[in-house]
Structures are given as structure tokens and as C-alpha cells.
Length: 361
Image (cartoon, helix red, strand yellow):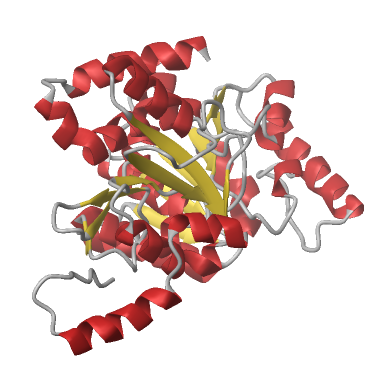
């Protein structure tokens, strides 16, 4: 991305720049045009951008995101005249959206949600090395010179939540086999973080080449074979010896919310296909050892089909809320640390506020 500065430009350059500006709408104009919308389902999400500065989040659909709730509770408690506003839109327009973010002086960074994570990393001006290998970002920080830098805290957040869940069973995370269903932006981050934590990662995806590419990048980055890959036809056999199976499936164009990730998924998702998906998943769930953790990181108003079905069979479950809390603390600090440090506020104070807020939600 190009950050265009005003000072020192000849008049001809400014005239050319003015024509370029006309092609890039500001954030309010993107909202007015319908290319962006302010989320209505996220609790504590502001309804306006009329504030001195803000953090913006972007996702591919409106859903009960926790990030605005957690970030804005922290801003309120810490006395900041700043808020996190969750927006949603079509990832196909990501270049135009990020250009509008960058050019708005009020924007100081924010979170990158579902649908945008595995696209935004290619458009920021600078990227954290590990996030670059993940090929996904979930945080953007606006640097003092106006450039945008991408990071990824999703994996760290998920690893912390899974560690806690395994400790309930008296198990340590290193050495455990973890099966990941999906190879999108969130899947990339979680797979890398789990590999770094010493687990044996198996990535299964409908498009096998995506899973193989992710496994190859993990093994190349760490210099040893920590990840394996395959298609969804291997779900039944791979999950049997796993400590946990993690679903990172999300598709705004399909009714995946109604599907259980452990069952066969065929498109188009007709009523018959959905029924077959649940029947297939129940067969797998019924045969799973009772200590296998079934996890789905996608947040919805209630349980996802994957979590709901696992509970019916008495299996331990882990949804995305602990991950969101853990990664939100890190992301909030990355984006707002300049202002926080100026007020003498520590990351530990931020963590305490967000943790209490999550317990009250």
C-alpha cells in the first residue's frame, strides 16, 4: 500500500494525487455506498464513527463478535475517548477498504476478522515475520509514519485456551496430536502456534493442496516435520488418536453454521446434505474416546453445530471465547500501546479489565 504525503509535492503531483483520491472513498462514504456496514450484533459496538480516533475491526459478516465488547470495556475503564467499531463487508473489496482506513487520520489500527485475515496480509506495508509465514493477520497497527503493519495473535490466544483445557485432564500440550479442520486464515495461525508449542499437527481440508501448503510452510519454518496434511476423507481415522480436534471452518456463502465439522460436507448444502452431514458426524462422535476435546473457534449467538453435537455425546468442548479473550489482550496492546504507556498503563492491567468483562458477559 502507498501512503501519500502532502508536503513537498509539486503542484502537478498534487493534481494527480487529487484524481487518485477521487477513486478512493473515505470510510463514511464506503458505509453510505453499502460497501461497508456497522455491525449490529456485536455487543457494545458503537453506531457511529464520530469520535476523535478509533480502532476498526472488519469481518465478512455481522455476528456477535466479542472484540468490540472487550476493547470498549477496556477503553471505558481506562478513560480513553476512543472506541473499537466492528464493520463488515465483502473481502473482495479489501484493497479499497484498507486504503480508506489508512487515509483516515482517526484510524490508529484495529482487528482483522473472518474472511479478511488471509487476504489483508498481502496488502499491508509491513508484516511481522511469523504472521508472514502464517499468511494471515488478525491485527493492524498504524505506524507513526502512516504505514500499516500486520500481526497475528490468534494462534497465541488459542494455544493458551487449549493448554488450560488439557490441564483439566492432567495433560501437557507438547507432544499431543491435534487435528485441525480447515486451512484458512484462522487455521493458519492456530496451526503455526500449535506447532511452535510442540504438538503434532494434522491439517485436514476440503482443498487438499491448501492443507499441504500450510503443512509445508510450518515444517519449513521450524526446520522439522511437525505438521501433516490430508483431505476431509481422513477425518474419521485421524481424530481417534487426537487429544483435540479443532474446527476453523467458516464460509459466508454457505450454511456451515448448521453443519458439524466432523461430518462429511458436500455442496450445495441442501436439507438432505445437512441431514447426512449430521448423521455422519454423530457416527464419528459416538466412537470418539470420551476425553477428546472437540473445539470450534467460530463464535455465534449460541453453540455451533459442532459444539452442540459434541455435548450430546458427553465430550469436552472448547469454543472460541477463551481464544478471543487471550488474543484480544495482545491485539489491544499492540494497537494502543503508545497511548497506554503514556498513561502508565500496563498490559497486566488491560488483561485484568478484559478478563473481568468476559466473566460478566
